[in-house]
Length: 432
Image (cartoon, rainbow, N blue to C red; front, side, top):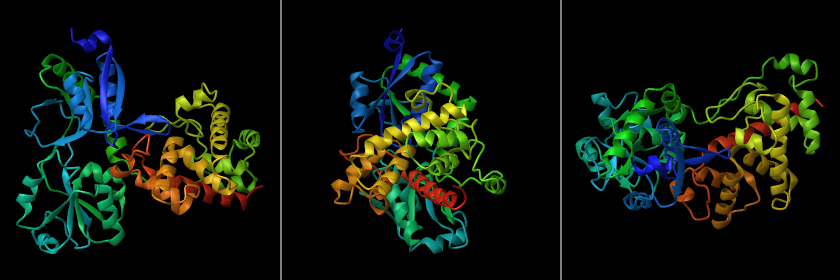
């Protein structure tokens, strides 16, 4: 019997990244984390996660037997493997792609299209593609164009620069383009440059019996509906949420109500001294006043609380409107108490409470620390702290020592704060 089966635990070392592991709304997330959680369950083991700040530590930890597997967002071409570690059965098949605007009126696969990109500035984040034989791909396409390998910029930064200037092209992986949120921009095209790559876990070299067991479990999980949901959740879904329409909005406003839950909302809003219309705007943004919905990340009910947060504030059934709103308000009270001694301006403080409610308090603390480190104002949200929350999608920032919980998809939080405040102003003009 392997030691892991005797202990009853599967120890997963993981990098902090949008593919491997990160924190979202006070809960753990990441494609590789959720996959391995399902694998551990299949093997009747309890998953224990050990995040690391330095990705290279994972190799050492595997060799020392300190972890059983590593989630490293390790993408490689079939057959190109490091003999110092073993690779699991692939969990996903990304591709290297050329990201560009379809301004030339053609696609990369059209022979005539090559002439339009010969002089384009094409960049590749070489540090992100270090596990893939990038030189092999560049050599193949060198007769058509030149690719500049960038050792300092991330795919997020390169894509952001391309979209802001509407110039240039970027070589990256399709999942990096999707997770950056930039693949959703109007007119953006992703054209394949490589055959399918493999996303795999790192496993200990020489542990063939254990590796066979974990590969069997991975193959079994891939055949389940859960796997399809994880792929959709992390690699297919749009990053920026779409504004929900108000259900029967005109009828509600005619009668002076915002929802069927106005009485509950008013009562609990008064307990924390916030405008009930602001609380309604949060609920509208979170659930469109729908009490029985759950997100892919496990958030539930009117205020879209994750179960752990709900339990912390007294809720046993988050689909019950009364319990959900009471717990949500309890969480808001907690955030208010945190920010009151730190952000003096009460209007500004609302931004920090809303941002913390959406992203989790730790991410906003990280963004403030980054703002302070780089000489910006840590007590102003718009144009200051919010910009550093966006930067927490870039490795150079989310791996900065002042950041304690790593990667964050900040674009969602900026949209949340803006949308809630806009809806609140709309409600103030409609009802008292």
